[in-house]
Amino acid sequence: MATSDGWYLIGPLIAVGLVGFLGAVFWRMGLQPTGTPGGEPARDGYPDGLAIFGDREDYGLLWPAAVTEDPEVADEIRRLLADAGIRATSATRRDGRVVVLVFAEEVEEARRLAQS
Image 1 (cartoon, one colour):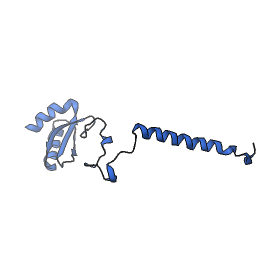
Image 2 (cartoon, one colour):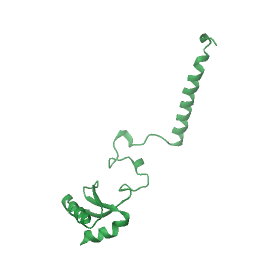
Image 3 (cartoon, helix red, strand yellow):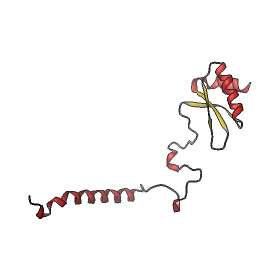
Image 4 (cartoon, helix red, strand yellow):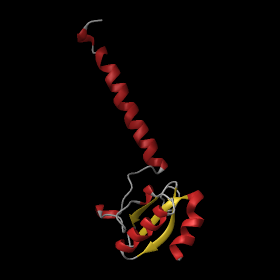
């Protein structure tokens, strides 16, 4: 096949046409880029698409045992739980409060110890 016939352009033209067609189909299905109008950031800093299950306070395998305003109090609770043999960590929520997190099988005992 000679290059002067123009057949070498068929492959790229088909690829560009297919990508354009799929883009139009996805646009019609409503799969547009998410965000607020005007390109403003979302209200809480996270787009709605990141909250897959609707719970933005998801800590995976860890459960909250205590919530406090003061990080020093959270450290004291973590030390108390460590003395009892319970592994614990802490995380700061978006509202500024500190959450002490433990594994699910130890959450009841951790809550009991944190209340005393």
